[in-house]
Image (cartoon, rainbow, N blue to C red; front, side, top):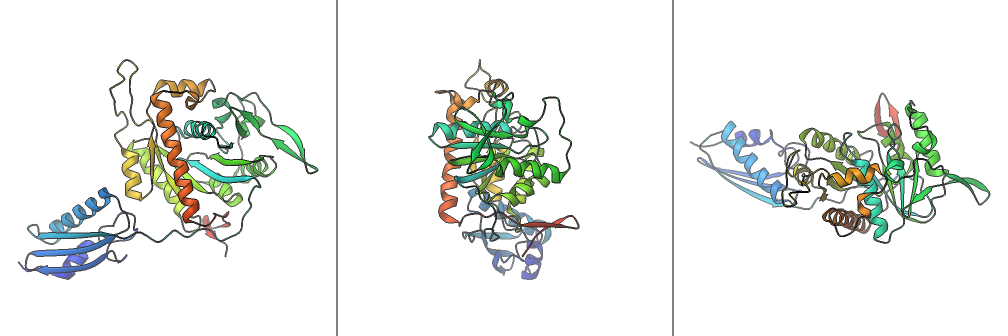
Length: 378
């Protein structure tokens, strides 16, 4: 049987190369197709360098040709990897806070994946490495950072800075903290529309005296919405860290979280993905691992999206207990958990270093909402 090049191209239009967006033909990923009777040679270029991406591309091409063109076709796929161009950075001037070197947004597609727990432990690990660290709890409707740092009864004091009254962040474990939780009662629900929440956040950002900070971590609310846009309009975010569990429903939302930061109108570099609750190890069986929510889901997602996998944290009772009593697990020493947190933090720092070497400084975006859509004001 003689195969048609046009039939092959038509079949390839139904699949997408990892990390490239549109179909293989439209994006120019397919460089050449040659047919010789029932033999097919496909030359393709992808931008995702992972072995898994290359293998998946090869398998997808073979399957679609067998399914849609000829099931007995003899197929050779030559996959070449070309590094993608450096992502564009925001060019609209935004606000910056004097003294703060790097601003890291910690986000999750859905709630309940341990984003605030990761933020708290990342902050402590950074402080133990010698960095000056601050945490802004931007989870307006469910602030939990004050509990995790055992400062829920504290209140920021006012200090005079150059003739202006500023809030002094609450401090514990050497970390400066601000949260809406400091200004509400424990049983008080925050029922605010977007503009009110944005105003409260701006006060905590710009009416505070943060001093010299190497890393300001922003604990964002789950999902993608108003608060996220307000933060990115107010501050030049250095990069974003996405937290997910290996569970399929969590991964689907984590993918949306990555996509939000990578939108052309936002374009905040994604430093990588952290997998929380990766496995369960009982205390009485320290060598056993039980993958309750699935295995390596976030790791595979990172590979598929072409972003860094920053580390996996186990589901262990001590993390929960430490957070509940306001003593983050990263304060522990010489434990497997502490080592996992240290490795995760080192990966985050390395990605920040790489990002700052490869890209110009991020600037705050300027978004105007029209008919419910976010667009860049040019």
